[in-house]
Every structure is written in structure tokens, then in C-alpha cells.
Image (cartoon, rainbow, N blue to C red; front, side):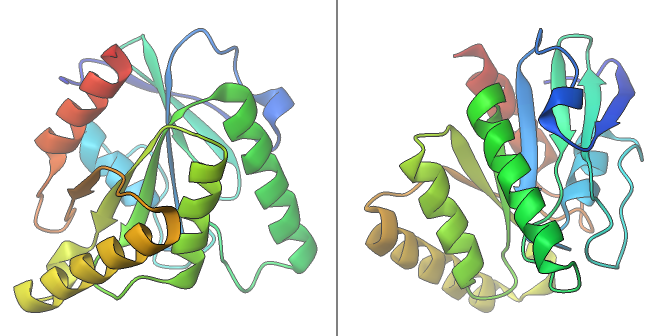
Length: 194
């Protein structure tokens, strides 16, 4: 997929504020500080999503219109400990409602430089239980050596096989080393075309 045009559309605090769903949506979600905004910027070739070293920076549903015919959606991260319990529940409810109502293609980002985290595996289980269309993007693959990355990937696959009985599609990415962009964009193009 070639990015020919890109514009910020709006930020929404709840689903009723989201733009009309005339276009297919690609939603990017993952734990806080896993690199959601950085991945969007990397894929788009432009700094459009606000990225931060501090977890919890994205607190709204942020819409970007790509090529005048699809939305990329930057969602708040889950698992941010400094947010109040009430705020975290509100985000979870709103994101759940968003997934069920808007039916986006979901890119679930998981940190590939560390072993699988329970919260990520639970999120995969929830997406699977709701029969939602998603794929996994392993981020920060440059932060681990090849042996550690291979071991983490093996652990993730084993945990998912045990937990949900199958393996979702997985792609690797490093925004620092600029790896995975073409594969991810081509993958998204195929998914949206099917």
C-alpha cells in the first residue's frame, strides 16, 4: 500500500464522537508504551500521531484519513498503572464498544523484546472470543538480540496455542531500524481488500 495522502481527522473521547464509518478502519492498540503512535508514524512516513516515552500519552481515539479511503485509528493503550481504576475501566468499556460497533481490522501490538505478558495474552483471548479480525505486530524487535527475540516469539506462539488453540497472523517491526514497513502495509492492503 502506497501512502499518497494523510490527514488528521479528529480525536474522540467516546464512540459517539467518532467520524461516520464510510471507510474501512485499521485500529492500532496494545499495552501503554508499546509503540502504537511510533508505528503509525513509521507506517505513514510522517509524524502525525503523538508519540512519547511516557506511557499513557494517547488517551483519545485518534483518527487519521489515509489515501482518502481508509482510517488509521490510534487507540489508548491498556494496562497503564498510573491512570485511575475508573479511567482504565472507562477506556476498556469504550474500546470494547468501539470494536463491536465499528468492526475495524485490529493491529494488536506486542513488545517483542520481552517475554509474553499476561495482559497481552488476555487481550488476544478477548479479541478471539468476540470473533474480531486482528493480527499481531511484534514491536521493538531491535531491542533484543536474535536469540532472545526468537525465544520470545516461541513463547508467544506457545502461550497463544495453549490459550486460544490457534495462532493469529504475526508480523515483526522495528521503527528504530526501519524494518517491517512494507510487509505491514502490504498485509493491511490485502486484509482490507478481502
